[in-house]
Amino acid sequence: MESAEKCGKAIVKSACRGDKYVVEPSWVNSLYALKVMCPDLVEFCNRFLFITADKTAPPTTDAPLKSFVPTELKSD
Image 1 (cartoon, rainbow, N blue to C red):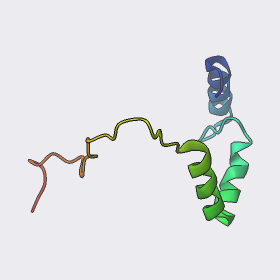
Image 2 (image 1 turned 180 degrees about the vertical axis):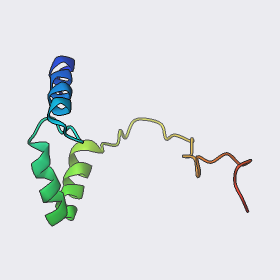
Image 3 (image 1 turned 90 degrees about the horizontal axis):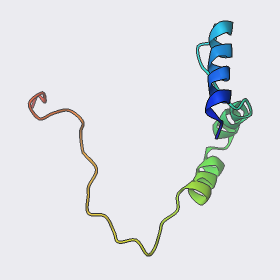
Image 4 (image 1 turned 90 degrees about the vertical axis):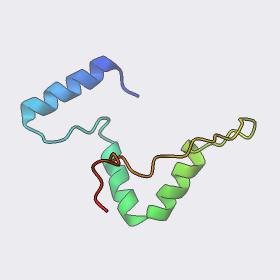
């Protein structure tokens, strides 16, 4: 996590250079190449590091929405 000040400076610096995207910190760019070459390894690491299941928490009964389009706007 970056501080708000560092993030703001990176955004302004990137805008002054005319960049279309801001990637901060810069080492994140190297992860893209790893994801292209070894997607299974990246998926395993993401599951291992970021997806944690709390075994003591009660299961949720809320189902995710199937669609974000209101039913009035759907065409059958």
